[in-house]
Image (cartoon, rainbow, N blue to C red; front, side, top):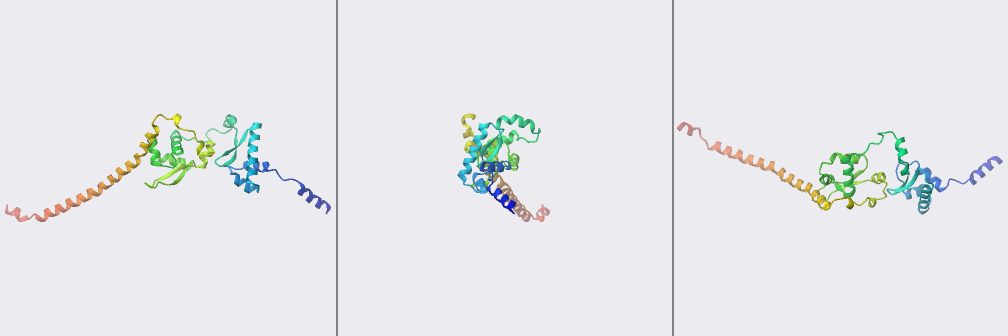
Length: 241
């Protein structure tokens, strides 16, 4: 009986894992960034305390030059392998395990990222080619998602996802690099003019859509004229002649 009481007392006196240890354990098993508020709720600790511990961990990993670091991206925290270790990781990962995006997909993704929310027709106008198939691929990969509809035309709008930010290592879209240094002069005006093309095409299509109705009406009129001609003709006129 004394031994049992001693064991209970010893277990109660043993300290639990530290906050830093708990954070590391959780972040090692997640597959996407975890927000500070979620970690605070799980660990039942104040958010400010959790945020401070996360920043201390990140700083210690940088100071020790570990093979991984702790980054704040897409509104949360997650472990990543350190950039200078990339060649070693690449040799370890089997060739072809990760399918890369095509050049067309990268260009389309860039248009969505910088002009979002944007419709598929406007993306196609900017690129000068049909982008429907590429947009479906980006949606299936979780890089692009629907973002409502355009008020004027009812077209579905698209935007980038949190997974897009995660893959690029960005905290928000504000961290996207500026395009101005890489674009020729007046490219933005040209893109806006090209973006108007789908509206003009749609108007032309509406006008063309009225043509069958006009042809049908003309055919009806022609049919009525034929019937009137048939009624006016009398076989006796041919016999008399």
